[in-house]
Image (cartoon, rainbow, N blue to C red):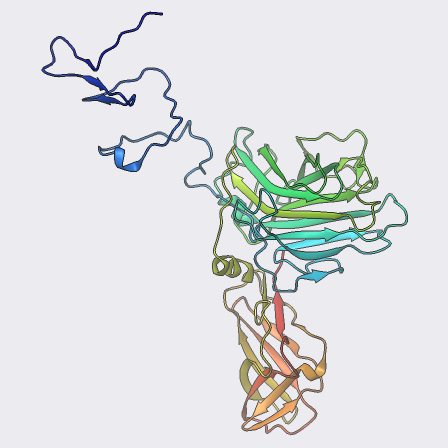
Length: 427
């Protein structure tokens, strides 16, 4: 093989070397360098070596970068930072992590949802910055019936999709979903997207766990469809279901994955193996759920705890925000309507999606009291709801006697820490 050994290359018309080479294999180009083919950099490119002005670069061929002007993550609390309602429950509905609910039916022992604290041994999510996961622990199911099911649900607001930049009616415009999944049982699970505005359509895809108790990154790109549309309003735009198990009442052997179809209650996913569902205390863990506009999954959009909490408060607000409030914490100021009832205005920290229609409480009468001047009187009924708009609610506290009509008073918690009132505007 022929070699040219030199320390300089110089054009015949140049006053000095165009290219110099040293004994450490460094190459110095004295002026412009034009490359017509590809450039591969296997080492690092230090910032201090880029001393000139950089040209404008088109992002059309770049990967891993969210499309400008389009929603990066339509999911609120996808990293499971906010748990206003509590960190463990075996009741159906919204009970633990904010914005996520679990529906189940036919179970012989109800599944438990809980907050799972991740550690450095959680390979994959931990390095990506996730510190919490949403865990379902299966109950002990004595048999498997057609109507049995367990689903994690998330609902996306209509206007968030309408204003996301996704051209939902176009088959060449895409949403990409990504998340981390782990299960104690290796098998194929399923995910369902269901549009709710206009003509309801469903799209299902498989999420396969090949190795038990090992985190797996699931990514799926979903095209639009001519029948899909969203309204610029605060209604329900899309439901997402992540399914540990669905019985044959909602599945078929001939189900078609990876395509939009008219919504069906009986043909949502292919018939599922029941191994996970039939395994006592099997676990199913989820974190890092992201839904973004574009055909490529980008890095998860990490938000601060405060930012994520504010987003959650639009849908659900509990005094204390899941933190244990001290005994005798003021809830609202108001006045005494008569000798037994105080009326109070409680202002929400952010405007809620819709006006709440009820008040949640601990259900224990003696967790609340009314203070008038220097006297506090324990309630003889739980707080009750009067009316509300998206900014505030009017509520009543009641005692057996002792109030002075027309006096100002304060409603507060009593009988230890951790008491609360709450309001919901969930989809």
